[in-house]
Length: 520
Image (cartoon, rainbow, N blue to C red; front, side, top):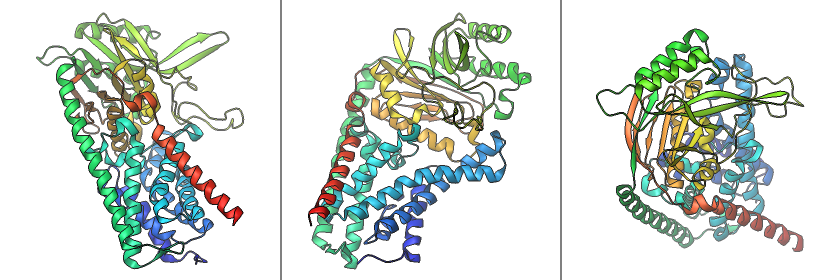
């Protein structure tokens, strides 16, 4: 029988799932929690109706996203200059949108009333399908998919070069589902009127352990292969500079010269040979490079003194007929101080770098300072440096797998992320942002180098190892050798095939159930 109301126990279980999900991610970083985090929600929605399950899933989602993304309030208040109540309202509205995915997951599971053997596969498939939809629907926000919580478990995540992070999400939900059925068998509870035998529960758990074992075996083989490849490919020495420029003064003209001087000072060699390439963060040049002549000249002369290549962020613009197009850009500057290439950001931050539906919502303003709405560059564009192609990911472009995949398919042998995470203060956000960089490296088998204004900067090898990372809100200049890989992984070539298969299975399972209802 379905429960006719949502009792307190079910609500507590839904809340527990939300809190455990958040605890799995940085900066709490208890990654093991995620393997049991969805079990309380599944227990809560057991034998519930669709509406009740929707509410319980929504509760889990709201608790999870309100606690995971709490830093939105700080950012909006500190840099958007919005009143506290408005900042909290924005977080609530944002969380409502994201919580809807968990609510739909719960409602769909209850609606389908799956048999246990089907549920073991379809429950993880529904979760993965919704995670994938979240990556592009309404501009997309694939921030901390459940699989990202395993960024530090190297052997486990190597399968991402085939399945992407969604493969890890599937494994996590598969284990949660198996543990849920084990719980039902031990408590002698039914699942939509079906008794869960201990044999089925044991076989399900054994199957999960077998899949995990195979995944770990694949991980060990891939790690060994990648480590051997590193020895046979060319390597370059890179330096990342972390200027630690306060956001409150970053765009103040009175501090532009001191900002340039600090980045140049940190770029100077300290007795070692010059690196092949020095990387400065997003908008490290807080002016229009090539257009502000005095400041451009100062930067060019400083680079000439250092005598090597630089990647640096700067706003830019181009003049078109009757308009000016603005971009958030990255420049490659040669040892002669002259620009040799430019990349324009392609995936912009809604309400930060452009205003969605501006024609219909003219009262909405941007939440960042300075220039007007940005325009987009071309997805997959790279910068050519010494016969090598570099894939530049600006800010949160890092969290979108399709962007790095497009760059690597276009020949990028190295991924570089330049960002300014000063917006987030000392919250969990910079740690969360950095954790997702590991997957871009593994998915494409490319080293990933990250230069962040206030941190976290660092180096990640093609196997996903974090070679070096800097602390938050400290000046830093770190040099590291990284390999230049070529070739394409299955994931780079074919993208989210696995997630699409999960979506297809979820849809087919739902349709089959609806057809059975109609004919019964």
